[in-house]
Structure formats: structure tokens, C-alpha cells
Length: 334
Image (cartoon, rainbow, N blue to C red; front, side, top):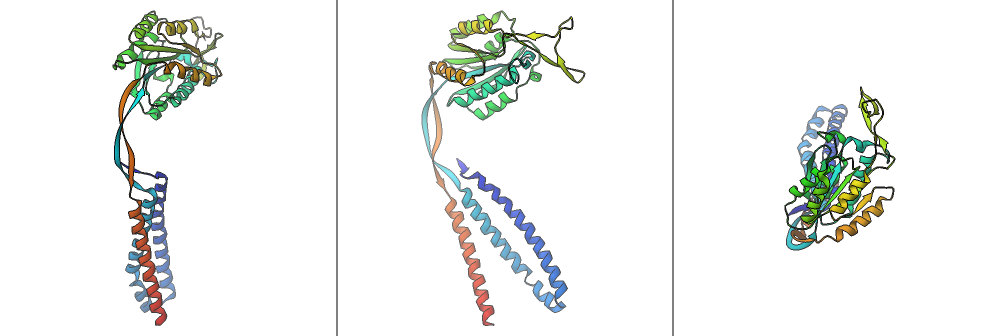
């Protein structure tokens, strides 16, 4: 495995084209000054040194380039080790229906849920995490992965416009999670929703998930007082209305989400102001799940090659310093 230890030093490579521009400008200026203040014979003599100057500049640039690569420190993986780690598979199912845009929690139910998912992902180590988005139907947004940065990115980009049809198909999200993870080991499904579900299969599927060694945790987002659902009509933000023109108030269905957690051998949470406590308690619940051993391969030792670049850069600098000294002594003798 090849890598650069100090990628930040790569920005120093921008000096190379910058120095080239300065050199070009200085050459133009020098040529102009020589033409202005010297006679034709002296001008031709001075111009013959142009090739020498270009060669000197090339070697100076090469020296700088080598020193930059010495700072970057190219490395090659020299020792590869196998290790076994224990982890669990965690699927997170996020409700992205329009009702999740209600603002009875700040800044909105969906934004609050996304922040919670980010905090939860950052609290885990070594597990595989996948994402399911659902509204009127469910789809796999991201399969199981240990790339937490990608998981956070997908979670942060979630919005209601990504839903093909509206609704809250929690049962379909549970079924999709079970179909998406084939490994025979205990797994966790975390459902984050306002619970506005009219799917009678949700409880049956939660029980089915339990029988398949899943632990189903549910997180309710929203208040019992509820909130109006934002909508855009003719470019203007307003609120969703019913057939009589009255604003629709979305109320969180805590009872359903609690029942799903009970059927799924999990635990029910309400996403309130103290999100850290929920994350901490969820860690306890996840640690109860039997983990599986997974073999991973990683490089534990890297061989550095900076010394070769450093040596080359120093040799060039010393060589040109010696040449300049010799020329100066020669000129002094003349």
C-alpha cells in the first residue's frame, strides 16, 4: 500500500508554477533593461548567458521539488497484518415523508433526525452501518459499509423530495432491512420516524424481525401537540391543507413506535432536547447485541522514502552553491 504521510505539504507544489511565472517575468524585465541600457555588442554577449540561466533555474526547481517530496514523505506498506474485530450490522431507517418537515421540534423533525443520525454514527466504532430512506415506499440508500464518512454524507443530504410517493411505510422499511442483510448474526434496525403509519403489517414485521435475530429500536421525532406540515404553492411557502382548506396538523404517533420496539425486542425513544442521553443509552442497547468476529487486513508498518528526496535536494543545492563560489573566485582573480 502506497501513501503520503503529510498530504498538507502537497500544497507547497503550488510554488513551482508560481516560481515559473516569477522567472518568466524577471527574464522579460532583464531583457528589457539590457536592451535599454547597453550597446548592441554587450547585448549579444549578455544574451548568450540565457541558456545557462535557464539550466540553473531548472536545477533550482528540481531541488525545491525534491525537498517538497521529502516533506510529504512517500511511504510504502511494509507489513500487513490480519486481525479479528467484533462488530454488529446496524441498519438505520429514516422517515423522509413530508410530515417530517413539521417544525414542532427545531429546526424541523427531519433536520433533528439527521443530526441524531450523525451523532449516532460518530459514536460507533468498527460496526457496519447502512441507510434506508422511506416514505410511501422504502429504498436502500446505502448498503452496509464501514465508511462512516459516506454514511454521514448520505444522512445529511436526506430530504422529502427524494421520496417517490408520500406516506410512512414503516413495515416496508423493516422488510427491506431484513432482505438487505443476509449474514446470519444478530443485527440492529433503528427506525427514526414521526410514526404516521397506517400500515397494519408494521407490528407483524417487527415480530418477524425479532425471530430473525434483529433488535428493532425506534425513535419518535415530534411532539404530541404536533405541528403543521410546510408546503410550497405557486412558489410561496404555506402549509398543507385538508379537503376543507384547513391546515393539516401532524401529530407524532408514539404509541405505534413503542409497540414496534416491543415487538422487535428493542427499546423506544423520544427525540427530545437531550439527544446525548439517547445516544448513550442506545450504545448500551447495541452493546447487548451479540457481535460477530470479522477478519480485517491492515498495514501496521510503513517504510519511509523521504531521505532519498532530501538527499537529492541537498546534493543539488550544495553543487550549485559550490559552482557559484567557484565563479565568484574566478571573477575576483580577473
